[in-house]
Length: 367
Image (cartoon, rainbow, N blue to C red; front, top):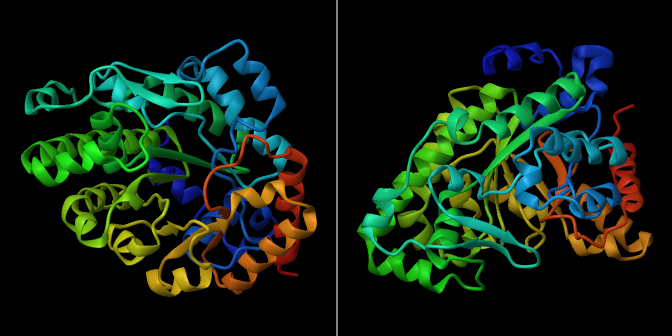
């Protein structure tokens, strides 16, 4: 099996000067991650694997989410669906951010229309001490095998994106026991029981780092750290209780030479801090204009986003106007990856997504 450095070196020449290969999704995506000028703006969508695809819904009638995510052949099948149907430049692994938590010994389930339910939420330092730190080859071997299957199928034509939940978001789930509007219990622990909070964040940081490095060894092109609930924090709380842990994860990924993407929702107040925490590309949601966000994070980093996902449910003329606005604000600068500000709505029409991908490619193609 190739090392991550060997895999990365094979596409080092895949930038604009690489001739016909420059038109592959893999080359396009990597060029953007390096802030080089691709032949067209790369496109992928968060939550593109599943949800709105009819074939996925048929599979869901037979299998629950965790069974599909933990069965490499099914995971690879779902991961590849949007690549084939939507024409996106990258496959993102079909997985749930809670998978590494099971490997830590956390008992959980994924309830439809609700999300992760933790059977025994973290309450004490002894609860944290009981959490296990294992290598991903032992804890989540099915994820790594799915990565290998997807990469083999794509044959270097498209990027493969691995991901993990960030320590803060995972800590919120583990303390709250389920999704929450404001994460009151988690923040109460953060402020009121700092020893418990930092002990949990230390352990989660180690697990997430190992998990992402395992995906890199398995062959992903890039990794994305999802800090989905970080918008619940103000800047000073983020700097004190979250930033050091995310920094350690990105530093470890950077040593492999693998591109990284940093994503959080509701992050308009935290953009500079997210950039400080790390990531070659900062992913922004629709609550901030892309050009203003890029200026704040600095042009030495790439940017991903940031179409409002609900526009996918609007008439094409409205959707096209929104996409044009995103591209106008990106202004053709190297380093833009077109994406939504969050995930694909389950109600979205796949044919509209395909039309959007084609539109972005055509509008930005360098002739």
